[in-house]
Length: 323
Image 1 (cartoon, rainbow, N blue to C red):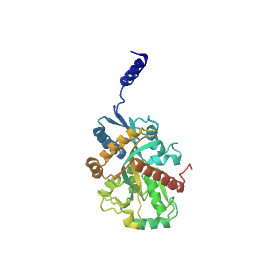
Image 2: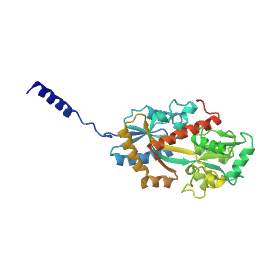
Image 3: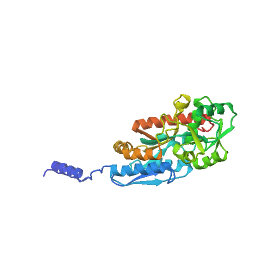
Image 4: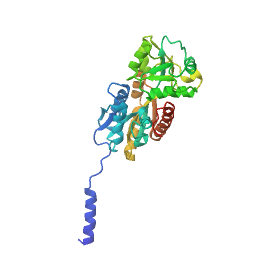
């Protein structure tokens, strides 16, 4: 055998001996949830994870990473190795952290996979409130001095607060008109409402359902473009004041920036199969969660709009600490 043939043989042998790169995924996937187990975000994460297991053929393990108003979990998603084995269920707060100087990152440090849920905020008041509809409530708020009315159910600058403030801004009302009494969620907020400590609780309709069913709370409107099927008697903003407006919280699958295109494409396809399926839609409908789906670039556009709009509203509220 000539020297040239020996070299050629060695080259072929070297190539054929290299192990073939395995197609993603070849091992279990971790789905990080930035909020506690048992809540709405956790529930959505677990039904999506179960669907992804079927689609991808590998375990998808939900891991709750709580703390800092979601900052801890979102930070872990952003900082994870971009190999597709660590993904997360990002929530609306990820488009507020930068403006509030709570965290250094923005949506741009994520690979957007798909928006899978949007829970519209509702304008909840006590059943004894003199306000009979949203129009009357907004006109009364307009006339009163700043701080005359109060709301609760979240921290200042949280998604439902920003949705409420955006509605006031839409009507030309000072977004600071209603003072926030901070609480650790809707449940203690409704307790404040029932005791007369506050007059408004912006929350999702499912969160208000127990109090609505008990006759202690009424919802004047839902901040959505369409009615929520499980709450047919609650009108939309357009039905009450003639203007389209939606606001609330959302959840979407995301991965660290730099995810390989082939992994991104497969993950988008798998999430789409789950999120557009009857089992997932039925899950949301049965529990009163709002349905939404945007994938890839469309989800990225949604994130950019949320980032911009939240920055503007937070500036109006005096909560914007960065430019």
